[in-house]
Image (cartoon, rainbow, N blue to C red; front, side, top):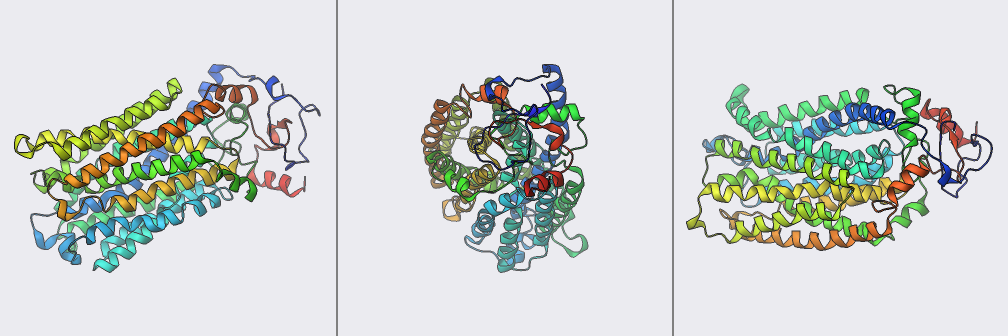
Length: 515
C-alpha cells in the first residue's frame, strides 16, 4: 500500500485530492504497513520532543497560578512586610483576588482554541505563555487591592486557552486513548516540578528588603519573568504538526499520521463548520463531563490556593508551612502519572476514575469531623494526601472530553468548553475556605467532600455511556484506529502522504482550489 490515510467523512471538502490508485477503498481493508518496532521508535521520538517541553510550560503555568498563596504567607512573622499589609487587604479580599483570575480565563477559553485551529500551535501556545508571564510579573508592582484585582484578572485572560489548547495539540499527534495519558504526563509532571513552589518561596523570603522590595514582590517578578522567557522559546522550539515537523523522517511521518483515528483533528482538515460545532452541543455527555470537571476543580483549586494557609493554621510556622506544602503536591503529581499510565495501559476509565474520587471524599470528611483535641497537626496533615489523589481525575475528564468527538473544530470547541466550565470551579473554589471558618475550615472540607460525591455520579454516567458506544474508549476504539487510520476528509478515499507533509501553505492551496 502506498503511504496514505483512510477517510470517512461524506462532505466533499477536498475534491482535488486523489486516491492512491484512483479508486475508493473500503476503510476496513486498510491495514498498517509498518512494524511495531518502527511505530514504537517514531512515537518515542514524538514523546521525547513534545512532552518534556509541554511539562515545562505547565510547570510555569502552575507556579504562576498558585504563587499568590505562597505570597500570602511570605515573611508572615514580619507583619509589616506581607502582601496583606502592603496592599491593605482585609476580610475576604484575598478570596476575591484568587477568584477573579478565572473570570476572563473562562470567557476566552473557546475563542483561544478556535484561533489555535487557524494558526500555528507553537506561536499561539508561546504567546499564551509569554503574555501571562508578563502580567504575572506585574503583580509584583501592584500597590493596592484594586491593582491586584486588575492584574490578576488580566493574567487569567492571557492564560486562557493553554490547557484545552494543549489537549487539542496532542490530538494532532496521538491516538484518542493516548491523549489523556500524554496530557496527564504534562499535568502530573508540571505538578512534580511546581511542587517546588513552596521551596522557591522559602528561598525568595530571604530576598525581603532587597532593592527596597518585599519578598512577595520578588516572588511574582522572578516567576513571571521566567514564564515569559519560556513562552518566547516555545515559539521557536515546539513543533506544530507531524506533517510539517523537522525531527521526523518521511517514513516516520507516515507512521505517526497513519496511526491516527480518522475522526481526529489535523493540519489538513482545519475548516470550521458552524453546523458541526453546534452539533456537539446536543451531546449530553459533554455537559456531564463539563459539570463534573467544574465541581471537581472547585475542590482542587480551593485546596491548592489555600494549602499553605491551611497547613499554617494546623499549628506550623510560615516557613515550615511553605516546605510542608511540597509533599502533597509531589504525591499528587506522582499519583496523576501512575493512574493515567495505568488507565492507558489497560484502556479503562471508569474504575481508574473511582480510584481518584473515593479517597478524597474520605479525606475531606475526616478533616471535617475528626476531633481536634485528639489529633496532632501531623495527623490532620496526613489526610491531605488522600485529598491530593483527586488531581488524578483531571486528565481523565479532559482527555475523555477531547477524544469523544470528531474533527478539528468540534474537538477544539469541546475541549475548550469542558475546560472553561471546569475553571468556573476555580472562581468558586476561591470562596470555599473563608476567614470565618478558620482555623479548622470544617465548613470548607464538608463542601468539598459533598461536591466530589456529585462528581462521582456525573463521571460514571458519562463514561459508562461512552464505553457502551465504543467508538472512542470502548471495544470499537482500537478497531477504528488500526483498521481505518488517517484523516477524515473526503469520503473514504486515500490521500497521498506527500500531498500534506511539506507545508501548511500547500494544504491551504488545496483548500482554496489552486491545486
